[in-house]
Length: 102
Image 1 (tube, helix red, strand yellow):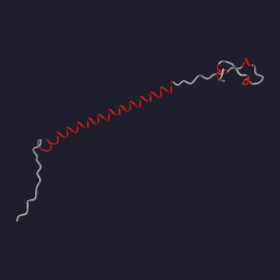
Image 2 (spheres, helix red, strand yellow):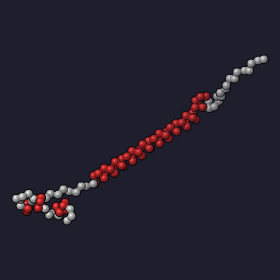
Image 3 (cartoon, helix red, strand yellow):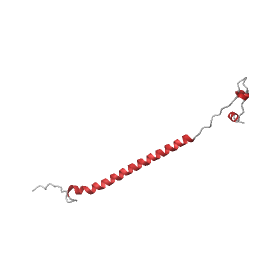
Image 4 (spheres, helix red, strand yellow):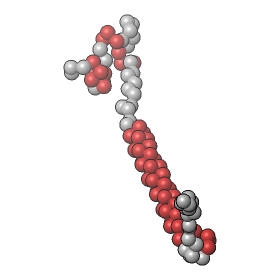
């Protein structure tokens, strides 16, 4: 066994770890469980899905607002001549000063 922790995992107790005067048969080695990466990986995946969902919802909201604004602009453009005075019957005239008499 190359590594000391492998020696402990296999149940071999090195003599330098046993205090003097202790019966080696009464020594118990407690191992911790290996770290599980399931929680952090799931957390990262949930965060990524949440960010993508938020971007999607924001994009849909902005595009729907642009669509409403475009529809409103077209409606106003067609309604203004009617509101001003009968669908284009009003004409604008510029007054030009007369030339001086000689």
